[in-house]
Length: 158
Image (cartoon, one colour):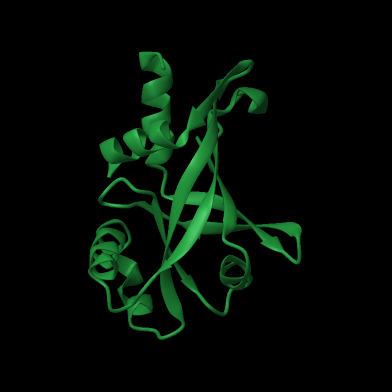
């Protein structure tokens, strides 16, 4: 990967909000989620309520997709918008695990206002492990990524 694409990948992996694609009864469903790169670079951390449809979807089918996009600037061609689409698998992090404590620390460091939801019984942490991705750094400039490239990128931003 060239240095420009690598810098774009790191910038996109650091974006704090993503579109989350889940499967609902076999059909796509997209929602917005705040997310944090895991402190160990193994994936993204989500803190979601079991009342939310996307959480029920994650529990029923762990296959997911994330879309991270740079903000659109004035007069920019939307087709040239830098973006990263990831495919992966979601796994719930057990409440009584060391991983949960680490996830909570990383999440609160980025979203201190989430302290309230950490105490609510219907919220859980999930880790999204990316299996593949597609980096689009501009019109006609796209690169397919494998899991190791994504993990390497995440380890630099977490």
